Image 1: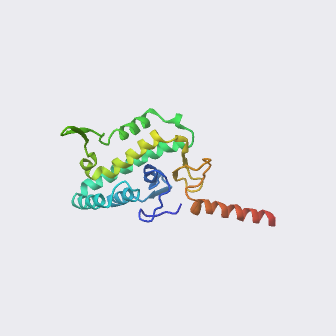
Image 2: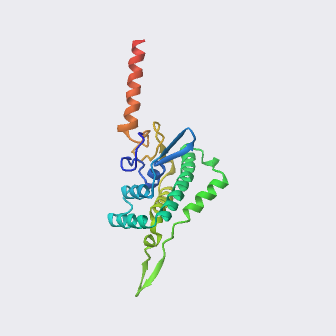
Image 3: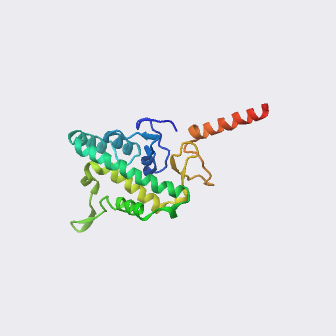
Length: 206
């Protein structure tokens, strides 16, 4: 997958949390990729994932402009969360979940418990669900990515979470026979096909 900015980044994960993980990589000193350079990038990513509407996007953008330090703090926290997510999902996709140490699992569970849980209040003669998203403020994009991870692990077969054989991006394989190998056939899949074609031609010549 080509290195891109958030506006250009393709969303191929199939789940918002996987696209969040794919937004950057800092596990190796020799290969660091980052697309979340500002809170605005984090905000744009959650908007592209369809988890907030245009009105919410505009409101959060204005709030971030007025609260620069808070926005920067949340961005830094988001990158730390993404690192934990990467390490957990990396082990899941490589059938190495047993290698999850207690420290990493504890961090992961703590993150999943951070977003405000749904609560009901009395509204006349009925119970009404409180809008916790409004209370989240600038943290809303991060909370939504965290909820996405929880929903994915709860509601989907974890074996369908895979890594691209080309660029190593994460994606959810919901094809009929679950044999998908590439994040995107037009990018990594096409490159792999071209390489196979080149080697076949080369072998015939020799």
